[in-house]
Length: 232
Image (cartoon, rainbow, N blue to C red; front, side):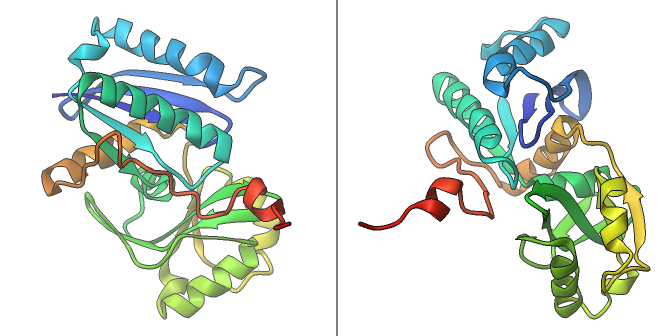
């Protein structure tokens, strides 16, 4: 089975191709002046060329559906919606925070955190046992200290958890004075397409699939348009 996984949730984008459980191509681009809308299909084409495939050969699509930057997420989701509808293929949506957990070496209670900018983070509470990753609480967007206080309220064993993040260095100053200042930490890569694909592979046997029509974003935070809109 051929699976194509995309992540456009942040400033960097990545594309991975799987042959069953084996990654056969991985294309990544760091954040830069070019937007995802300019380079995404070029990256998809490059990944497919590496394994000599056509889009019609792909059996299932996987995509990071958030939380993340609004415009960036929409580009990835729109691309997958279009391709899945065009070729009549199923889609697996994967939470960015769940994908970050997949990166972690640690097992047990995990607290994945990614930068939401504006002084906030997207964060969640998950439990990982081998290949199983299960949400233990809601995904939130808050200032880091506020989020960690919420984690302490959600889980009595929060201090035994491991905080994981692709931007751990930037979090350290605020972590020092937080309710979980002594929590174990693990830095993980920011490239997510491969782990998005691995989470999708785990979800497929459980029937956790969608189609192009019902695929939706997991924004967590409302858009600027919603926040700024005022009724007349």
